Amino acid sequence: MPNARIEKLDTARIALIMSVALEEFAQHRYRDASFNRIIKASQMAKGTMYYYFTSKEDLFTTLYKATVREFNRLQPLTRQVPKLKHQYWQTTQDLLEGLENTLLQKPSISQFVLNFLVGGEQQDDHPARGTAMAVDAWLQQWLAQGQTLGIIRNDLTPSRLAAITWGLWQAIHPLRTPSQGAGDQSKVLLDLFQRLLKPDNFVSQRPAPQPDLNF
Image 1 (cartoon, rainbow, N blue to C red):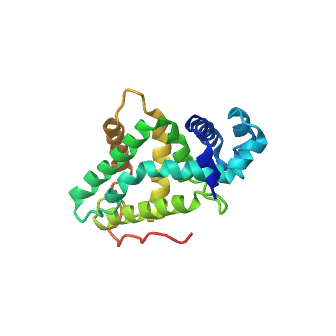
Image 2 (image 1 turned 45 degrees about the vertical axis):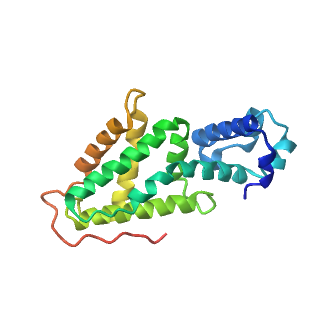
Image 3 (image 1 turned 90 degrees about the vertical axis):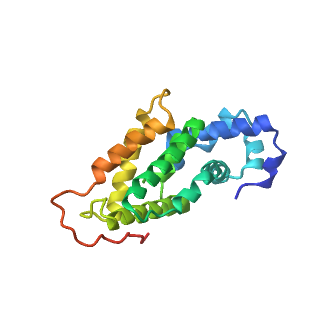
């Protein structure tokens, strides 16, 4: 776990370390990121860095916890499970706007967050695995509710739909331009989600599959 000694670091030094670490983990993902590269770019002696952060995991966890706090404001929205059709897409748009607004305010954390939320970073030894799996489970339940309301296609399980949703977000996210605000980006995403996930006329109206939460 992160070492309490980091409280002794001055603000400028900790800001530099966090900035360098953020860049490293965003570019290389956790498993391929190099603690030595971070140490070198932070212009610190290796022994000094290990005094404050005993491992790459310690540093990642410190950065990850600080980053996750940026999204706390979205938690109330995630608990509002829509009971009516018109509420479902409106609440979904509110969530997308909140997410994109946070990423626009902190553009440096965008790829970092994307890395551990979207597959490939959910290995058993990943420090953020618990968060990634919890978010994916919530998304499956959200999609299952859309199936129950009859506005999400029911020919695929919620786990498959979640995988499609993550892939779409990952594909569209780099296309955002600096001139686009959170509202513009969220509307594009919502339109794509609705087109991709809407019920097909040829899909039989069988009971919606239950979320596959076995992980």
